[in-house]
Length: 207
Image (cartoon, rainbow, N blue to C red; front, side, top):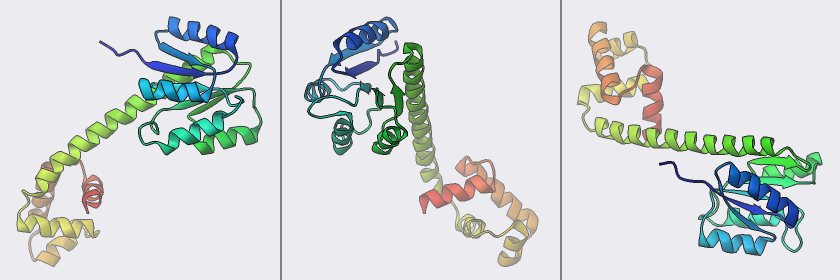
């Protein structure tokens, strides 16, 4: 069963919060709605949201202050932030992106555009997570493969990483080209890589 995404909406405009909360709830999200940054921080500490939508022009602490606080805490730094604001100057957008917001949408806005941004943000996060898990699993697998290399395979692998071609490796090790090709094929098989380039990239990762 797919987990319902939790969104925290931070805006001091009551009517906008009510309308947007209702719209996003109808689209299948669980919504927290607050009118200031301090209340937002309380919600975040109690039940970590999956995404934050925040205005910038809020009294006391503003949206820029908010995202700075989030980036200072390792528990909150991963939460994507979408700025939804009337501050539409290019300099405002640049400041927002430099602080780490994932998207910047100016008021008035189309709710469908915001929804598309939300879905795109979650899709990118899911894709990154999948790639990270796959890469981690692959590296774990290949780390085991490293321990299975024979001394001869290690010598050939070192020369491959240094940029030697098969013919040069054969001359260097005083062996046949066919023999080197067989060793290269064995190395690719053991490391689950498709070609020399992937093999070299993998070894750079380890070393």
